[in-house]
Length: 121
Length: 110
Image (cartoon, each protein chain N blue to C red):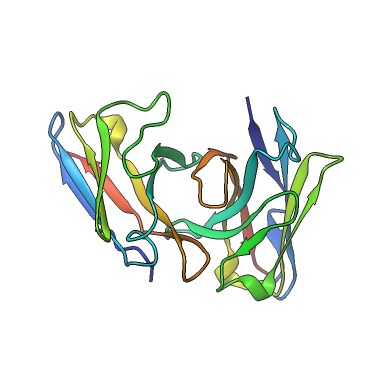
C-alpha cells in the first residue's frame, strides 16, 4: 500500500528557502504509475496546489508560485522534494505531498499527513 | 480568491441531506472532471468523489457527486456528526495548466 511522509524544518526565516522531502513507500517513485504533487494549507485558509511532477520529467506549476518553486526526484531514495525560495509569512502553512494514480489530471488519492512550516524570524 | 467558488459554510441536522455547490468556468469544470476532497482538522485530505460522480473504494454511498456545465455539486445524505469537515472541489484548468480548488465549505451537523 502506497504511503507518503513529509519531512523538513518546521521553522524557516523570512527571505530564506523552504525545503521539504516526501518519502514514498509501498511502490517505486519511478514505476511510471503516478504523478506526484505538493499542496499547502495556510492557517485559516483553503487547500492550494503548488506543483505536480512525473518522475520522467513532466512538471506543472501553480503560476502564482512558479518563479519560486523547484522540485526534484531522487529515485535512489524513493523521494521527491520541494524547494520554495524567498519565503514570507504568507508561506506559513501545512504542506502536504500526495500521489495521483495515472495522468496529470487524475485525482490525488494518497496523501501524506502534512507538515507545518512556519516562516518567522 | 479561489478559481472555483464554493459556499463558505453549510449546516444541516443529523439524518438530513445537504448539498455543496462548486462553480467554475469552461477552462476547468466545463471541460474537465471534478473531484471532491474531505478534510478533517489535523488530518490528511481524503479523496471523496472523483471524475464527477465516482466513489473511491471505502467511501460511503451516502456521498454522491454530479456535474452540469460549469458547475458541480456534492451531496451528503443521512448526515452524521462524523461528516463535520471541510469539503473542497478541484478540477484541472486548461488555461492555467494546473489544478484549481474551491475555497472550501465547512459543514456543520447541527
